[in-house]
Image (tube, rainbow, N blue to C red):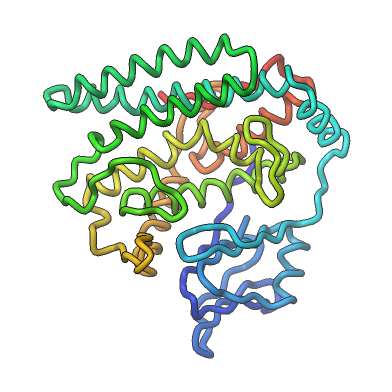
Length: 343
């Protein structure tokens, strides 16, 4: 099993990244604030207007370390990845399957089923933990509706029908998402999902964490030799990592949604951790991003029993394991792609 290495997150807009021997150094105001050996890193994620020296970019490319540049709210601007060393035959097969409507439907169905099942599990956990809450009947109703959609997804005959089912499931899930938030702060009220830009604090937190998950999924897919741009459920679009977005769908409820709910319900984030722009966009503050990223990294260090492999793995390796299973299916080693199903 692959070793889970660290991701270096640089959140200060004044930071500059450089190379010092075999180390990554972070400069802020003409002072070295951090020095990390390159062999300890799997990727580097920057937020804001961080710069990086050409020498460091070369070092990252040589050592297989992905370097990604994001806006302060987590939107990807650019990503430097090492030269692909994957099997060209695997990618050729990936492209062939993408062009085959039945193959595209089969993979997309697994992805959507994973998302719907995991979303239902999140709702059922709320019902189990807060059985006396007056919102339980409404949440139970949506959980049952998701069960119906799961059955419909299994029988979907076209990718467009399947996308409609996925969209309907997401709409119903987010319609009761506010009930899962136990915070008494009115600032954390949630009415609907808004992305570009996020229009409230819950959406800002979700969008930021979804961006981190997208980075991890892209890195995992490239590592196993797949093209993260060519997906199945998500249509081809220049500059969009379609396959990474596919992989994210089944992992959102477990890796992000539950974590965002916990951060709010456990008062690890408060309304003061966010700033509202004149445009109405809501963003995490600089120091608050560090706090959320610390929690994200800590979560990844935990362990879980993988439902398909029946092995205990680090939580942070889930995207890699799913990417590996995707590659095995595309290569023909598996009869179907098994999505990650949370317990």
